[in-house]
Amino acid sequence: MIDTIAAVSSGQPPAAIAVIRVSGPAAFAAGEALAGSLPSPRTAKLRTLRDPAGSVLDRVLMLAFPGPATATGEDLVEIHCHGGRAVVASILTTLVDSATVRLAEPGEFTRRALTNGRIDLTEAEGLADLLAAETEGQRRVAIAAAEGNVSRSIEGWITELAILSARIEAVLDYGEDDAVDEDIDAIALDARTLGTSIHDVASAPPVDALHRGIVVVLAGPPNAGKSTLLNLLAEQDAAIVSPIAGTTRDRIEVQVARGGLAYRLTDTAGLTRTDDIVEAIGVGRAEQAIDAGDIVLWLGDGAPPRQDAIRVHAKSDLPDRRVVPTNADVVISQSDPQSIEAVWNAISARAVTLIPSIDLVPLRAHQAELCRTAAHALLDATRDPLLLGENLRIALKALAAVTGADATEAMLDALFSRFCLGK
Ligand SMILES: Nc1nc2c(c(=O)[nH]1)N(C=O)[C@@H](CNc1ccc(C(=O)N[C@@H](CCC(=O)O)C(=O)O)cc1)CN2
Ligand SMILES: Nc1nc2c(ncn2[C@@H]2O[C@H](COP(=O)(O)OP(=O)(O)OP(=O)(O)O)[C@@H](O)[C@H]2O)c(=O)[nH]1
Ligand SMILES: [K+]
Image (tube, rainbow, N blue to C red; front, top):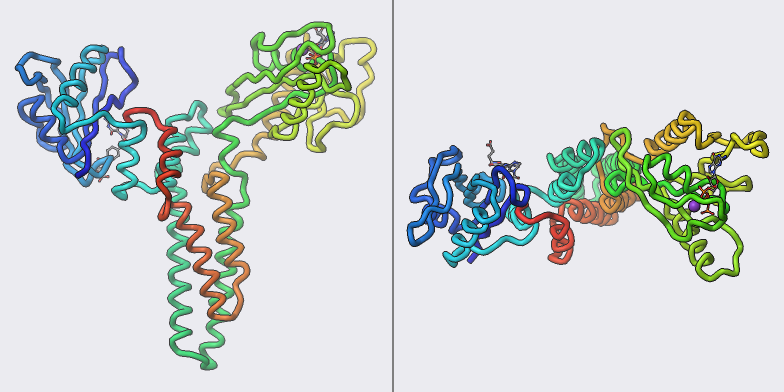
């Protein structure tokens, strides 16, 4: 027996209006018990909700959606009530007291949509990203995945694989005839062509950096002006600035949205040889941050710790900083706002190379990895029908893992724990 679940699906109270959703086999009975009668399917009607003793809970707008053509694939009732804390609590309590309904877990409505085949794993992951989206860039990519862009590409490839498999079956059935021998070459060629197109899509930058925020690490020797630059980029006093070398001891992270992208600006301890235990730990953390960062701003005069670092020549207003090294990418001074703008331009020019372009299939890194596995199996396609069949099976298995055909409970638990209550 499947539980019927209920939760607030709008923002949490207090609010002007709150939406409570009830999904499952007992949803309509529970709705009727509260409202006396349900509106006709998929139309909003005004109803007075009462508890079992007959006292009025609230006057609400209500909708009933008969399954399976619903967001969850089950019978679904929506109660649009007044958004006061006690109003919402009284309705939920009355629902749950009826014993046929329990409170939903985070993401449980969406999990049911997945279980009931209304959406696949890529769409569920897209929804999780959509709910977390804070910038326009994140939203655009997330809605594409939630609307099935990833799913459609994968399903298209799976269909092509099925056709290739059927062609191999035909060859195996007919055995070693000459005409058939030629056909195996054609199948292997088509498999490799498919492998190439999957590989192209899977080699584009994944969406992960876009969603988690592009990590920009400010690095350099002590006193180079890193914290000053961080504060100017973030337009806030996030890091302590002082003339004392070694002021910044630990990483300091500030989240900034700019040009529709999310950035995580990270100040680090100045890189130096030191006997101070705490400072040495800070230097170790700085080195880790430099390795893990998406973009490194290097404020030192010596060679940058990473070849791809953006070299920033800071404090250019000081007399002893007038000579600009020829390999500097940006020259800045704390009193020149245009020079800080130039740093942002250098950052965003680099950022666009790290995120997928909007016309591509927005893959997560783990999805791209599975697609590359499929692509490699196809690119290895040989003219031996048995080996070719095996390669097609490997490719199919990898692609099916993207859409979640064999997702384990643990994987789903991890995904849906990212969702909020009521989704
Ligand atoms: N009030 C409210 N707003 C909401 C949702 C909701 O559940 N309730 N959603 C929650 O996710 C999103 C909309 N998603 C939905 C997805 C499918 C269906 C649905 O009923 N689908 C049917 C019929 C489609 C149609 O009307 O043509 C279907 O797909 O067969 C409804 C909402 C965002 N806004
Ligand atoms: N004249 C001038 N001074 C600057 C400029 N940028 C930073 N400073 C000064 O340089 C000193 C060090 O600046 P910070 O930003 O703390 O340097 P840091 O690299 O974070 O230093 P650590 O914490 O030691 O790693 C401070 O006194 C700043 O005011 C600049 O553009 N011009
Ligand atoms: K500092």
